[in-house]
Each structure stands twice: as C-alpha cells, then as structure tokens.
Image (cartoon, rainbow, N blue to C red; front, side, top):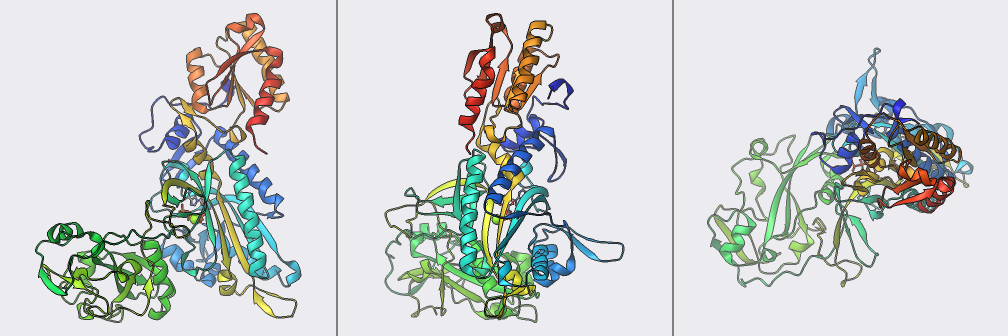
Length: 602
Ligand code: ATP
Ligand code: MG
C-alpha cells in the first residue's frame, strides 16, 4: 500500500479523551477513531491487526477440532427468559442492549451466546454419538458497559471469539478445557504477548473451574496474585491465602470500655494502643434478591482485613433460595438514605457488634426481619478480641466467641487476599502482585444452561441427561490493544511482528530524487511479492515527518532509500531496538525474511 493513497492521518498531540498509553497511541497513529462512548471505528491499519489476531485465534481453535460458525447477534427475549437471565441482563446488571420490534416482540443484542447455542444444541443433539462437539465464532459483541473506557479495552461494541463445547460427562469436558488451555496459551504466545493464566472467579455455581488469561501490563484493570515458585496464580477476586498472624490481645477479661470518637479501626487502635489484628470489625451490607427481597448482612472480619465482595456476592447468591430468590440484583454498603428504608432506629455505626439486635430492622414483606450474620475465619480465630458494643462511644474488650458473642453455625472465607500474605500451597511462599489485562476466559459451565433450557441427550444406557457444557472467550479487539500496552516507547507503538499491520515500510526521504524512487519502487514490488507486507511512504513530506510517522505506527522494519544508495545499499532500521544497518539492496528481501522468521513464533 502506498501512503500517498491511504486515508492516513496521524496526530502530534495526545488526544484529551485517552488515559492509558495504548489508547493514546492507537488514536494518535490513526488506528482507531471514537464514534461515541465505547464505540470505535477500526481504521484500515487496525483492521489488518484484528484480522491477524483473528487468524491466529482461528488456527489454534481449528487445530483442536473446534468448528467455526456464526450465530445471530439479534436474540429473542424468550431464549433469555428460558435461561432465567433476561431480567438480570436487561435490568439488574443492565449489560444487554434490549429493544422492541414493530410487532412488539422483545429482543436483545448479543452480549454472549450461551442461550443461542444451547437452543441449537437442544434441537440438534439427540445422542451421545454426536458428542463431544465444539462450535466457535468470531463476531461483534454488544455490552452496555457502565464505564466504557480505555478505547478498545472496554468498549460497548467489541470483537470476541466465543466457543461452546458440549459433552456427555465432566471428564470429557475437562479434556476439552485442557485443550483450550493449551490453545489459548499458543494464541497469546504467537501474538507475541507476555501473559499468565490465573484461577478465576466462576460465580456462585462454583465447583467447576475457570481460568483467565492475563496480559501483564501496568494499566491492567485486574490484580493478579501469584507466587515465585510458579505454583499459584489467581485473580484477586478469587485468590486465597493465609492471613498474617494476629497479635496477642492486650485484654484478658471481658469488659465494656468508653472509647469516645473511635468510629474507625485506626482511631480505635490508637485509643486502645492495640493492633487491628486484635479487633473484630462488623461490616454492614445490604443485598437485594431478584424477587425484590432486601436482606441486611453483617460480616464479622478481623480489623486489618478487607471483605472480598466477589466472595461475599457468591455466598449470598448461594443463599438466595433461603429468601425465595435465584440471584442477587445488588450488593451495597447502605448509606443514610438506604438505611431510612428499613432501620427501625438509628444504628450505632462505627460501634456495631456481631450481635447487633434484629430489632434494628423494621421487617416487612420486602425486607427480611433478621440480619444474615457471616463470620470470616480471621475473626473466628481471635481470642480476647475487641469489638463494638452496639452503643456509640463504647467498645467491648477481652471478648470471646460463644462466651460473649454467639457464633453462627458456619464460618466462611470472605477475606481479600493481599500481596505479602503466605500462600496456601506452601507457607514459605508469599503472594506477589501484578497488574493484568484479561484477554481470555475459559470456563467449565457444567449443566447450568442445559438444565435451565432443557437441552438433553440420550446416553448409551438410554437415559436422558442434560448436556455438559464449557465456554471459552477471547477478546480479540482488547487483545490487540493489550499488545500495544505491553510494547511501546516514547516514539510510538512497537508491534509484535506476528500481528503488525505491515511488516515493513519503505521511506523515500526525497521524492524529488528519481534514483530513490526507482529503488524504492523495485523493493516495494519485490518485498510484497516475497510475502513481506510492505508500505511505501511516497508522500510529499519532509523526511523527518516520515520517520516520525513510521515510528509512531510501529511497523517492525523501516527501509530508507537514502544516501547509501550510491553504494548500492539501503538503511534498514529495526523498530523495536532502533538498530540501523546498511544492507546491499539485493540482500534486503532475504535479510528481512530471515528476521521475520526468527521473530514470528509458530
Ligand atoms: P470483564 O471482567 O473485563 O468485564 P468479562 O469477564 O465480562 O470481562 P467475558 O464475558 O469472560 O468477559 O468475555 C470474554 C472476553 O471478552 C474477556 O476475557 C475480554 O477479553 C473480552 N471482553 C469482555 N468485555 C469486553 C469489553 N467491554 N470490551 C472489550 N473486550 C471485552
Ligand atoms: Mg471474564
């Protein structure tokens, strides 16, 4: 492609709307253009990158025996009602764009395709003889993200590869899941990315495994905790660890103490001259189930620890049945306004005890009249602890479970693991932290959707059983931007060779020089014919501008038909290292071919 004929516009300044380097660079270098919040045009250079990423994804999927397909983006509401997700997706999480057609039928724009694929499977799969089977597609997804940001990282319209596998049993599912782990690792390696596979939260259905593939980068939205020995890595949402030891409480007998102005752990520690590890804090949450039922939740946890709200949400979802619901719609810390709706009297905030009386709740048809009390292991393990007294300005010290506070029948792991904690698998290993961009997620779904939607098969014994399912997603457009986030310098993008929009760019410093043009034209033809995708910068611009643009758009190899041509040579510059060397014109093609084959992993 000739730059003189391209829609090629680069910006010198960082666009104000962009926060992270990859977003700034893709905008500046003319790869993407913002059309609306979370909506982007992929310009020709970007589209080439996306096609290359898609092709690598496709090759790795096909190699596992999965089959490519294309499912509808417009999805009837009935399918989502069958699976029980219509209300949560259109109202609670609100992530699905929903619309009504002229016949007043409700439809959603596909954020994901479990419902559609399960319907296909239900109608087409009858017998164990048809299993296992795995279909995938590469397609635009729509999600009404609450905070679209960082360009293609969190868009409202983005490209995803999603695949769904169907099995007779868990063992067969586990085999495909392991194959996907390999395929995903291959994809990311071939795209030239540094990544880590981590244990991921799989929601309240639990039991079944799930892993995320994280591209390591400072700007990542996710936190990963891992150990140096390589035996543990998890998303912080899911991570488990051993909390640091608690200090010994300075109090050995139970009493109520006046502790004025100590409504935070920090103030209380200062006042009582004690460590937060000797305190049980009681955190109040409010959850609303899908049937409209509000439940007040009191979490007791050690003073130095934080509640992992993903773990809490999962536990509350597991308990949904106790309140006549299926899922939770919201989980919040109730502010003054929220408290007004159910509080029978004003709460002793900052001084709450694990025994806070249920009489604080004005129960009703919509509000459970009892606190749901959840105690975390870190609080459970404390002796002679300090905690609230349910009276403002007072705490109790030297308290013990069962003696002074009733212990609920079950204890939970609700704490957030932190960097520096000891690892569960080996006490000598401590958790380290890293930031990551989630580019892929593989998931053992089990029978969640097939059961809800009645998608069954007949086994060898003639029994009818629900299909066992797995699902596997890669954010193709997010991955492409993540590659930039991992590889750039002050001058611009440094594309990994395998997914660069072009491999080489020929810069003609002076288009008034006939010899320069002739050599450049010949090389341009020869390189492209040899399969080296090459741009020709034949614009009527100053050489400096051309060099700056070539660096900005990040093409791996730049060939300059400059002064050296009088010796039959051109200058070849490697973008990543800025290393320049003069190479005889007749050796350019073979040299770049060799560099490329070294740089591209197969
Ligand atoms: P996240 O936690 O980042 O919101 P998710 O867990 O909802 O993502 P999945 O449903 O697992 O995402 O989707 C599969 C993949 O699609 C993700 O791993 C991610 O790479 C990509 N993806 C998800 N949401 C977006 C988005 N809004 N913009 C771009 N890519 C996305
Ligand atoms: Mg995910």
